[in-house]
Amino acid sequence: MLTEVHVPDDVSAAVRLIAGGATAIGGGTSVLPWLNDYASPPTELVSLRRTGLAGIRVDGQTVELGAATTLAQVEHDERLADLNAVVRSIASTPVRTLATVGGNLFARQPHGDLAVALVALDARVTLVDDTGSRELSVEELGDQPSGLVTTVTFERPQPGTFKYVKAARRRYNSASLVTVAATVTESDGIVTGARVALGGVGPRVIRAHAVEAALVGQPLTVETVRAAGEAGRGEIEPADDAYASAWYRTRVFPVHLRRALLGR
Image (cartoon, rainbow, N blue to C red; front, side):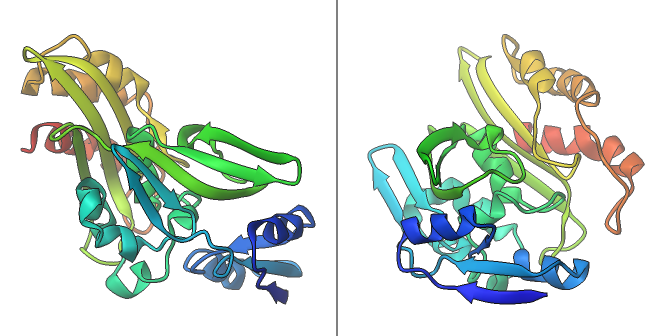
């Protein structure tokens, strides 16, 4: 049962409460359904709405998102054109007005599409606990870090280098069947760098190292992407759920990889 909701006025107070066993809550779109569905033990929540963690700052090519920034704020910020499209693939408009950047980092797969994009963008977070603060990548974050994520930082990708596709049963409020996010750089028609992240095909966001290795040093062609998709089959761990079977996700993964990387 839920015993208490704290509404601290600053980050330090929130961190103390979390260190004492309370759970952080932003928009509540993930935490509250989880509490209802799984009949949690006595739980204290820490609302982040007064902690000053909402906001978007852009300094040159560097973007900093406050953890309590809503997905709707990201969606409508013209400086974040690549993420605008990512966020529009998540849930519905009412949900996006509540759901937060920080919360989406911990959404259980096959949800959490923003986290997939942030891994592809090599984003980093600032994590604060009762011993201080430290920085780590979104990829390293894990499911339940000890502390509070306060900011997410990344470099805006060069035009045309960020690619994203989410396959879902319907447009709104549907979990991912396969999500592909990638940052791919080329020189003289040859791939010189690739970061590929996958959602919907494992228990957590997957960094597709085998896919990346198959792309780098090759021209970005149908044949190259097909080979990368085959290499990536060994990295995914899809599960059966109400949206699709593991067999189906494995089958269509190379198709959506191609659509993300080649646009067809």
